[in-house]
Length: 137
Image 1 (tube, rainbow, N blue to C red):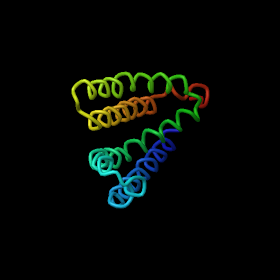
Image 2 (cartoon, rainbow, N blue to C red):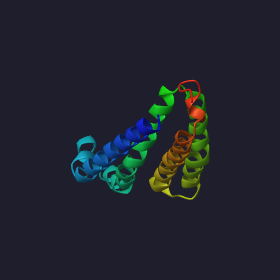
Image 3 (tube, one colour):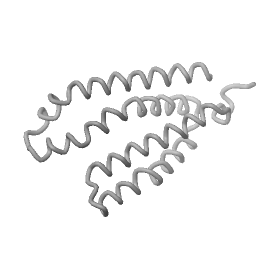
């Protein structure tokens, strides 16, 4: 299981690196396909870096989600996802509104949410509690 989980993470993070590269390369082209509003396009300058650079982290986190789901560890995964949202995304999003941080604050919260989840699921997969009945020692 550990070797398979490692392979899955490498593929997830690698796919994230490719996605990040594509997003960065296509930055001048993609946003104008969806809007011609100058104010909206100006905001994409703020969030595009977050979107692109979080892809490798998100790819690894989502890959580990799949490993844990496949092992039937969904209750733990649910709990850590909610906890990560409550500890990362929600507070920074609220602060963003109160302190006028704008989209930078919201995307910082989203990035923190992904990082917290990645750390938690990474630690979970490194242990053996998630294996449950799927693998007998």
